[in-house]
Image 1 (tube, rainbow, N blue to C red):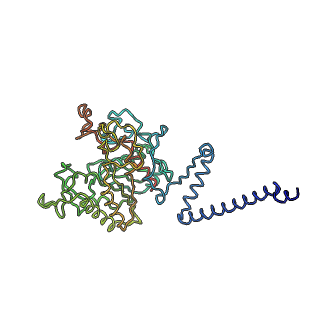
Image 2: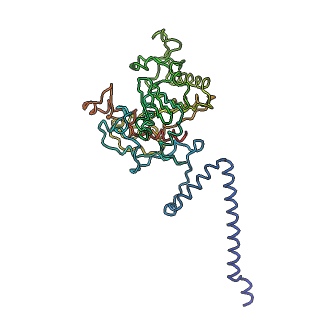
Image 3: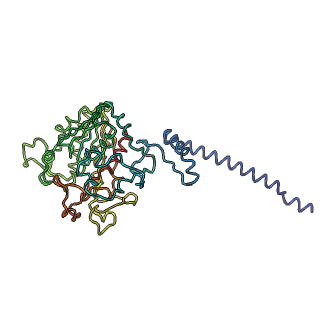
Length: 422
């Protein structure tokens, strides 16, 4: 009996021993967790992110009890949040701040509902970055940010749509007698008088000079003066915020007619260059003007990346499709990239901006716009100053506009990101 008892420990001793080991293991795990967390914070050096995550966890604790999947996104910080990574989330409760009927400044080219579009779901998608919370566009915050300032959008018709979107998102909060709009062929100026704020658009599709700014020429007759922005830049000087873009007008062929010096030389003076080469020279001319003229302590510079073109439905797997016509939902495939967005041209832009002395905030809207095959003007637009007729609408393969966007729509999201940067 005694021999058998000495060979086996009592159950109480075994229990105490196991509990002791478990306690030591727990302390060791907590220590490792603390070291790991400290290293992470030190390497990221981002107290804002940490506090935002804690805040987000506190605010959503009750939801997380019901939903075990923890949402650890942080408050938007342009240095921390990769805005290109995310997804479009459908939210019927979201309503645009304006419509193409309520805002008098939306061009007919972008007035899809006014021009007959019946499906409105494209208005209820919101971009949700993977890393952070993108704040909603607040018109009062926007106006306060612009108090006493001059904001100039400069570029092509896509930049004009962003300007119109921005104006429409704020103008409804301002009494009629306290705002004004002057529109021209090249320059458009909206003023919020109470805020002493000016929000302008300057038409410069190449940013550098060309022979097709006032009178639009067919592509084969266009000549780009790649060494000068002097005609345009005099209208940009003195601005507090400058927001640029240029892409789609360069994409008219594999080679472009370019010119150095004076247009007085006529067509005899041009040289044909590969499109990426011409684009790079033009951007360098623009960049040189920024670096030599702009005081970064007084003026902020933004550049909006290329807007997506959806002219080939086979890009998203619809072999029998007619460009973007009749598309009613975004592409849900992660990192979808169609043939309408040229990565070589985007690399040229990145290369030029990275070598500039004056800081440029890049609004990288390309990837998030890639998914939105559903939100283009399509057949609900105009051509040559008139709406498409029934015969043209019946031929979307030829006439659907899959470059420009309906307003309200995707450009509102661009401005949501823009305001978050401001």
